[in-house]
Each structure stands twice: as structure tokens, then as C-alpha cells.
Length: 301
Image 1 (tube, rainbow, N blue to C red):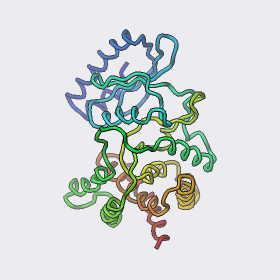
Image 2 (image 1 turned 45 degrees about the vertical axis):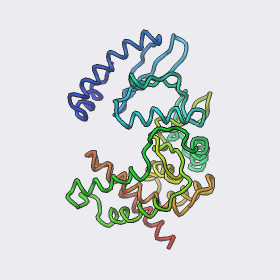
Image 3 (image 1 turned 90 degrees about the vertical axis):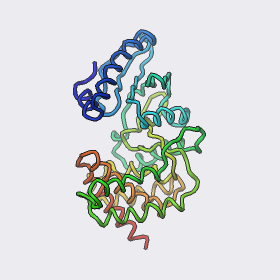
């Protein structure tokens, strides 16, 4: 049942602990199959959590998610509950001690990638974001944007004060700009943390709905940025798309155009740092989008 590539990924990431967790997942699936009357489908191809479609008691379609026991899964566990009824996929059952979540299966489950018209995409994004964002009500210690920003510092540590493959000037600019934005931040919300095209799905019963929250405390502007890292390179003039997206988001959601741009630059650099840290070459996208945000910042002066 556990895909070979997922098994290898977890073993590479966590060593013996990852191998032991895989064995626990296999045992847990047998237990849950009987306890919850589950029929398993073919697992989804994902990297960090084991996710499989199920049918409950031969009547209802759902999704079983089993996460490696770390802070990321704990944050998602709590965020799914905190967002309930606010544009987030419905939690049907949950067990933190055993490390699993049973979610409603969104059908047909098509993502925002399926819509070509950018104006329609942005209206859907704004509708979902507006429903999601609310003041923190849980006592769970979600990470804040400030803690995420430390990823830029880890890049320096990784390269002994250098910036590796990333241009020195954009890393330095992010290091200066992040503290300015964070020191002036106010009106903080519980954010999704990864609200992009692939994490907004259509359901016949629920309409457009978010999945896979990370759980993050910060200004609402910050939750718009991950979206801008997606689906932009196909445009002939990407800067025009980015400018249009930021202006539309600011208008639809009553956000600060200037802070959207500045957060956009910082998070694009941070995203590039994370990619380097993970040994992947997606950092090139982060750098490219950071350059576009830099152009928009120059227009503000």
C-alpha cells in the first residue's frame, strides 16, 4: 500500500525513525480499516504525508491523512480544526495521539489550475481567503512570520556567511526589509500559510475550498504571496501579471498594496532559501519572482 518512492523519501529524510514510522503507518491502517470501516483506494503521490482516498462504511468518500510526528503536522492538525466552517475542508474524525486526520473528499476536486481566466481565479482566491482569515482563537503555538523569516539566516549559516547560488544583493535586501515589515506589523490573523492554486479545490457540495493549511500567524498580506509564485511564467510579460494580481488582491481584500509588494519580495527570497536548504533547484523561481517584486518596489519610490 505504501508507495516505494514515499517510503524512500521518508527513510532519506528521517533515517531509522522514518523507517519505523512507515511500519507504524502500515499497522495503523489495518487498525483503522476495522475501527472506522474503511475501504482504501490508491494513495496520492505526495512527499511529506501519507494520504489515501477511502470509503467509509461503503457510503461516504473521504481522505485519510497520516503525518510524520513533527511540528508541521501538529500545526496542520490544529489549523484544520481552527478553520472549520471557514472555507476549509471538513474534518470528519481526528486523533492526535495516533497522528491521523480523516477529511471530507472534495469532489470533483479540480484545483484553481483548471481555470484559465485570471480575473476569475483572483475572485475565487479572494473569496476563499476572506472566509479563512480570522483572529487566532486556539492556544496552539503556531509559528509566526518572524520565525519563518529566520530561513534567510540559515542560508548564511549553510554557506559560512555567503548566499550560495542566490544573488547576494537580494538576500541582503530581504534581511533588511523583513525586520522593517515585522516591526510595523499589526492586526495579526491565523493564516493558511500555503494558499496557492493547488490548495484550493472545487467541491459540488462546498464550492471552492482550501486544503492543507500550514497554520501561520501574520498579516493577511503575507498569505497572498505563495499564490504569486505559481502560474506566472506562461505570461509574455510576467511583471504585468504580478502587478495586476497585487492590485486586484489589494482591492478585493482591502489590503495594503505596498505591504503586499514588500512581503512578496521577502517571501520570494525566503522561498528560494528553503529550496536551497532542501537541495532543490526551485530556488530559481523564487529569485525570478523576487526580481519582479523588486521592480514593483522601485515603482513605489
